[in-house]
Amino acid sequence: MFSTNKTVAFHTLGCKLNFSETSTIARNLLDNGYKRVEFNQPADVYVINTCSVTANADKECRTIVKNAMKVNPKGFVAIVGCYAQLKPQEIAEMDGVDLVLGATEKFNIADYLEDLNKQEDTLIHSCEISEADFYVGSYSIGDRTRAFLKVQDGCDYKCTYCTIPLARGISRSDTVENVLKNAREIADRGIKEIVLTGVNIGDYGKGEFGNKKHEHTFLELVQELDQVENIERVRISSIEPNLLRNETIEFVSKSERFVPHFHIPLQSGSDAILKKMKRRYLTKLYHERISKIREVLPHSCVGVDVIVGFPGETDEHFLETYNFLNGLPISYLHVFTYSERDNTEATNFEGIVPQNVRKQRNKMLRILSEKKRLAFYQSQLGTTQKVLWESDNKNGKIHGFTENYVKVETDFSEELINKTETVDLAFMNVNGCVEISRRPSRKFEEVYE
Image (cartoon, rainbow, N blue to C red; front, side, top):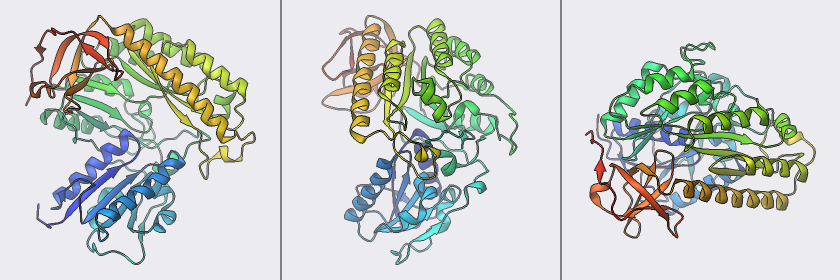
């Protein structure tokens, strides 16, 4: 390592996968002598890792660039991520942007930072997405409590609304050996929880050794990670319902490390709309997956992604979705309003849903989500759970999550930070969190340093 006496700040938009990659890019620059500072501080370089799932993500990128320029008008601004791969020229036209790096170039960012003077013409280095056929492992370590561990990248699905295959390329996976190596490195840092992330993690194993064959399955990866010592929890992030096998659900139900929490995209509760979206399942399969989870893990948390306002979604289609979700034993929703994305098949579909109707449907499902979350939290009152406390101190309170993702609050104490405590869940407070009983059984798990 050498010293450049240069500072760098990072801002990440979008998903857990982006956060894991930002952390890896940051470690690369720190290894090249940069010093990391907060994004609201003057820095020599500002790196913005972008998302492009919705139009709002694109607009937010513009806002973040403006904010950086207010802090340091002479700061060198580099844009990476999905938006940078999809629309490099559009980004290059933004005031203040000096460098745009595509899907493969972002991991070699240090090579492009030799001249940090503001550029008259923005430099663009963006590959054809077909060249994004190799894998770069990543994990985040900014949080003392949990780390996002990337195990897979890219997607071979052709959903008609999605730009991710255009932004990230084909489905490809890390090797089991490297995933385990990264997991052990995370454990060695005293981090207690790992969240597995990727674009389509259920497709794990494809492209593991540079070919399209499945050398391993997602279940095999889960079984290997279950043996990693000094990690208390492993959480599975979003996984496609057709790729979440019953065998995986059953394994999680018996695991000491994998927690009872699943996030399973639905997108629509109407089979007609699912077919237009080119999803690889119908509501019958989705219902079967939820039923299997409830059968073997009755107290588990189940989150759902859903899109409203897709072209052709009539009032009847939306009510199908609403009623289907209302009848499912799920715990919360992530609701997305459909957003037209260039170069996707859905932009040519008829039956455009007016924006005011999209907003109304979004609001209805958000209200339903809150009802589901409250009902789930209330079902957990009176139970004894393990809470992993985090490091925040907000108004004298510290919060943490149970294994099944109930958010818990109690009075702040330094000794609780990054500790796992067995507590009794007593009541819900005005903040929408669960409070523990006044006399918790202060039973801490062994701490690994």
